[in-house]
Structures are given as C-alpha cells and as structure tokens.
Length: 181
Image (cartoon, rainbow, N blue to C red; front, top):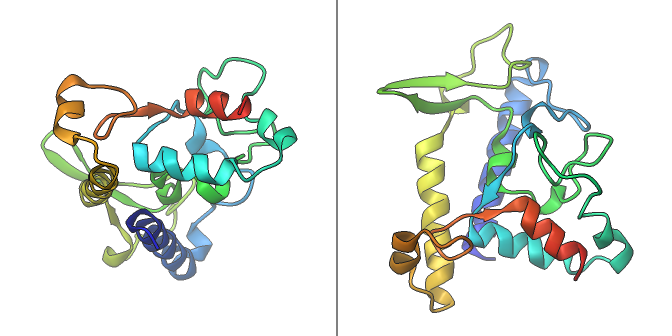
C-alpha cells in the first residue's frame, strides 16, 4: 500500500468515526454537493491516483469526464445529479469535507464544518480535523512520491511549475485530459 493510500484510508476512517459518533448532526449524503462549489487544484500524488483509477474505466465512461460546459463555480468532477464522477479516487480535501476542521483565519484558530452539520451539538475534540496537519502530511507524501520518481521538489516549488512535485494541478484540466485518453 502506498503512503497516499494509507493517508486516504486514515482520512476516510476519521470521517467514518465522526459520522458514527455524530451521525444525527452530519447531513453528508450521496448527492449533496454543497462542498463542491469550487474549482480544485490537487497535488501530483492525488493526480496520479485519479489517473490510475480512471484509466481502468472503459472509454465511454471516461468520455463523460470532460463535461460539456466550462466549469466555473462547481468542481469539474461533479455530475449533473450532484454526484462525484471520481468518488473512489477523490482528492484528500473532498474526503474531509463535512467534518469539523480546525484552520487559521488570520492569526486565530477556528473550527468550521459544513453549514448543514453540527447545528445541534458541538463536535468532540477528537472529531476535529487539523487542516495544517493534514496539509503537511499530504505535502510530505507528495514529496516522497516525487522523490521516488526522481523529481526535484525544491526546483518545482521555486518555479511554481504546475503539475510538478510541490506544485498544483487543476482538476478540471486533468479530467479533460483523461476524457480523451
């Protein structure tokens, strides 16, 4: 199992634990796309996982990834019914949507969750995901994968090269490319 797969399983397990413990205050369900009103960029290791997953699909299914209209305010992976086309290989940020997340707003730490969740209870402290820790872990896994491929993370980060280790890849562009593969 790769480090990225290990990390996604941990985040999925965290989400499941929060849902079990706070199920009545978690409104996340198939077809809810409130968290998907965003254009995403992803790391190279996330792109590789999506690419590996999608390339196993039949050509007809892949063709639907490109979409017809330009994605402006919605995630490129979202279908017309509000479902994720790449759910099994979705990026790490998508796996954490819905759970309470500790992040920084200016110099202050805040805890935020989906506006539909935690309306009646306060999440247990061990049910709050730390965004800085998760981001650091993802970047470390991305850097390790790049090193395994023999790529120089420092150079890519300095140049801001998109798609290079340490850089970001537009999900919409990746899916459009995979639709024509």
